[in-house]
Amino acid sequence: MSKSVLLLGAKSFALGMLVLFTACASAPRRSAKTPQSNAVVSYEYLLAPVREDAELDIEATPRDKNPAVHLRRAWVMLQRKRPQEAVDACALVLYGPVSPSAQTEAYARYIRAEALAALGKGKNGEYDLKRALEIAMDERLRERIEDAMPEAEPQVASDKRTAAPRTPELEIHTRSEWRPSAPIKSRLDPMGRIYRLTIHHSAMLLRSTAESEAAQQIRMIQSAHIKGEHYGDIGYHYLIDPAGRIWQGRELRYQGAHARGDNNRGNIGICVLGNFMRNRDGQRPTEAVIESLETLVGHLSSKYGIGQEQIFSHGDLVNTQCPGPLLREKMTRIARAAAAPRSRGAAAE
Image (cartoon, rainbow, N blue to C red; front, side, top):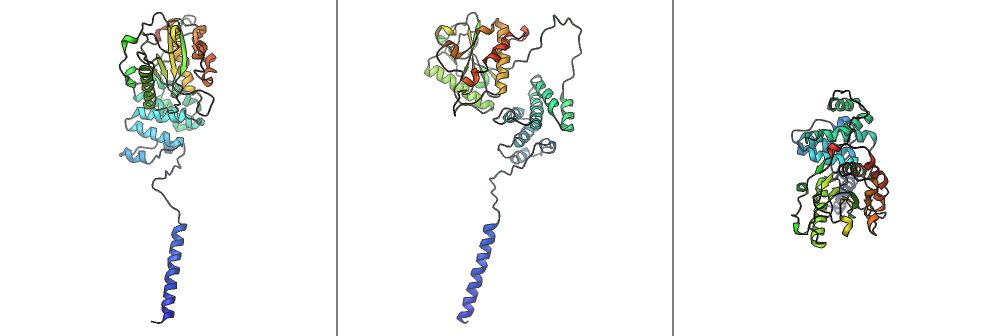
């Protein structure tokens, strides 16, 4: 074979490889690890039937910031008998850093109400259903909400002047739910008469609305109080997480350790989990936090006869920035809850 034929063959081979390489390089690359999140908040996507193999359906909803993805996961979790995970997924949408649109909020509140009902807490979801019905635009969603609404209780004639005022339901997560260490009772003092309360923040950033994250931070606080401060238990009587859950801390029969010295006498300590300072590590309290504070303060005020003038922020009692200026600016609204008429039959223990 002549040299010219060999040279021509080599050139043809090289040209072919160049074309093949160029074609491969220009082809779009798809990574199996890249979430394909084109999901939109719609009836067809969010409330579509769940596959028999739910794990496949869950894998089809990548974890990203798209609210539609969180709500689809919530619906899948609910259908697979995992309602608490559904509640947590909805909370990410309702109380995350970005306020949801009306349509997104309607779906989130409907799914959360259904999940709460599955947990046996249907009363807690009544507000969600009412709110969802107010803002829902899709007729099919409105029909579902109306079907889920509780039947109206029969009206009983009564004297409006003596009718008991309606009170928001108070749900408190018990100590056992955050798995505390045993208190050291020799370091605890009896509470005595309760006549005031004080609001704090944990000063530790917490944006997650997951129940497990809140429980972990409460355990950290208890450990710091017992081991570092030599308290008998966690210093606060109640704690509130970013999703608005209220947690039982130190038992109310014991005086708290949260306001320094005699300031603890007759003083209920309430700590909001989060850091509400005005800096890059700070965060704003969620609306769920403020609503829960109002409800808790209202119940405790009614139970123990605590007036507005006896509701303090930590900084009112000692020289500290606690509970942070972003929460402290809400104190007038929170204290007003103490003056609102409350039912005395639903007080917290």
